[in-house]
Image (cartoon, rainbow, N blue to C red; front, side, top):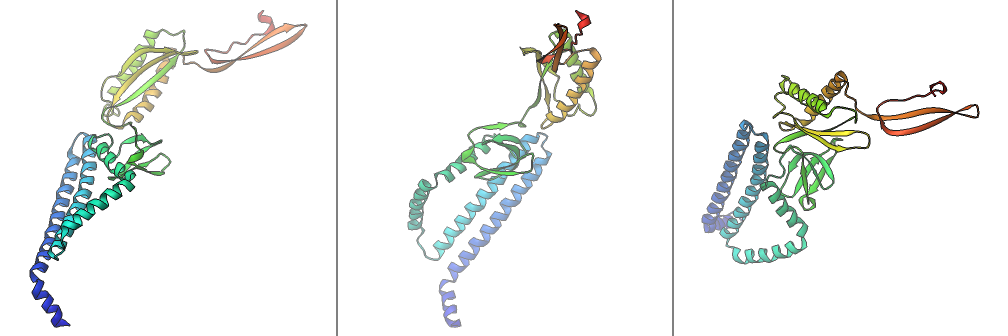
Length: 302
């Protein structure tokens, strides 16, 4: 039996050596590419543009998977060729099978193609906060077929790219805190706008927030007339993912500034009035959605 094995080795030693060399070269090639990709990923930490760095991380992660599968297929084809198996008919058969699988797995193919375009176009990257397919959350992983979101409750959503028809990206590139503030119809609009602009400028000068704000406050002016308030609209440019911290501090300072300047923010109230009828007091109660103050009347007021 050992003699038979020796005969097989001597008869096919060249093919065995070739297979060994192919496997070694494939492994070395895969390790080299993996190291280069890992080195490139580490270098993205030095990129000042966080969004660009995350996009590169996403692309290289997918590229690594694609290269690994490609190298594996090439090694398999070469090994089969060295074993004397004709790979031409295999490739033809694989083409036919691939076509049949393509018809039967259209969703899978759509996932891959859609995912490729979404990533290449930079619509989403790792760490982005997005809303897709009715779910919102932070992107934790992107594969060639799926996108994984972690919502604020901690739930993980795995969404195939075929279900991604539109992408609402909240954190990509330039971020803004957009505000709509309602004030009483009795207020001086110019004074309100000046107050908001001052709050925005003071916030931008604050040492704790000047690194979060990426430009001067933009107060657009009177945006619309609401039922019982006039709406002032504007926005503050912020750096990546800093809009929530800026929003909370801006709202706090606006409330303080409005109180200091006597600017009224309407809120729901109930108005109560009294009238005499046949010697008895009849109380009337009416509700107004927004009111500046509570007016209470007594019989002596008439």
